[in-house]
Image (tube, rainbow, N blue to C red; front, side, top):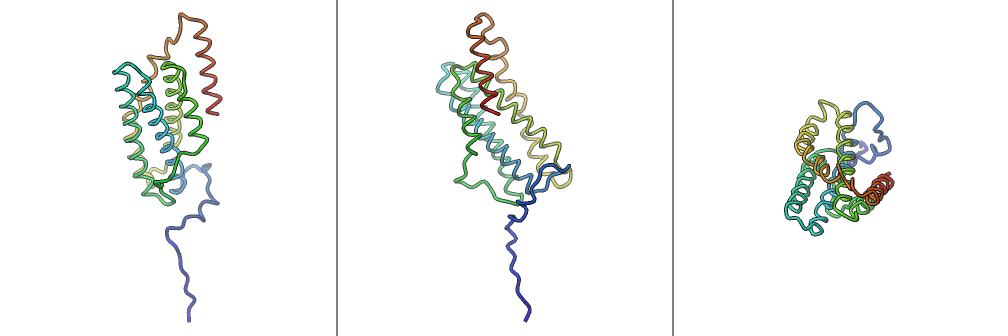
Length: 195
């Protein structure tokens, strides 16, 4: 009698050991991992913007923050759809942001004022789009066609999200050297927290 071999077609654990992003193109399981990193960053940016809504007295700014939170949430929907199509584990309902990323975003969110928050948000969202750009450059044009399509949706909001903080930080505290020095210490703090 022939020996029966059972194979679990949903078990991709053997690929984990060989995982590497150093090649010129990504394997589908690596694409899923990188998309998950972007997913959690979008999640934290959504939390950051929504968390500041109650702290801002201006209704127009509140509306902008809610809109940005909504856009980040929509990006999460697109990313999750693509992650589900790729091999490897999906983002479970009980999954949570990796602790290092969560802590960094929470620290940046504790900005003493709107100008400092805008600087922190601008910093983090810039890092997100740098990650998307680097990620885009490593995708296989054939295998990752669906990923390119999802990233194209995310690019539609890039300018709005990247430019939101500019009016707040462009001339931050130019007439008050003491506050300007504090602001520059805050910028250095953001950079330390992120790295």
